[in-house]
Amino acid sequence: MKRKELLMNGLLIFAWFVVCAEAAGALQEKVESTTPIPTLSPPEGNTTFIDGVTWCVARPGVPHEDLQNALDWACGQGAADCSPLQPGGHCYQPNTLLLHASYAFNIFYQQNGNSDIACNFGGAGTITKRDPSFGPCKFLASETSAASALMSRSMPMMGAAFLTALQLRIFQDVYY
Image 1 (spheres, helix red, strand yellow):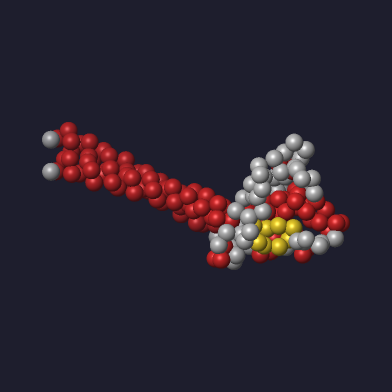
Image 2 (cartoon, rainbow, N blue to C red):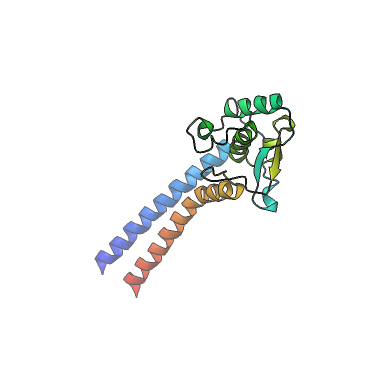
């Protein structure tokens, strides 16, 4: 019986240490998150996600030069991963400016909070609820982005819940 009590106390101390360490990390993260950081990305706040899954695509009818400038910016300063648009990439064909701009615009839009401004591109972008994916070329969707963000935020809480369940199980084994 003494051995089980020692084991129980040891596990409780360990669990307390883990929870405190997570809380300290969360507090430090909270302090850091209140420090304003200058950034060139659009403001957060997905106003379009409320209405469901969204994508950002190039607006048909935009002059060729404007689309090319917006595509160059998205793949350059905008830091969108445009490697699938390179020759041999899974989104290279059909090799059209409208398709390539749509893919790049959408990557930037998804990486920058799905906000309306993240799909502006000087008027060259527009938000749609129609999936522009085709064949091997899959466009990232706002629902996918939101789900992965939610999962990354909920992992510490899931760990704490597991520890609590483990503590209850050990407690029952020791005292019942």
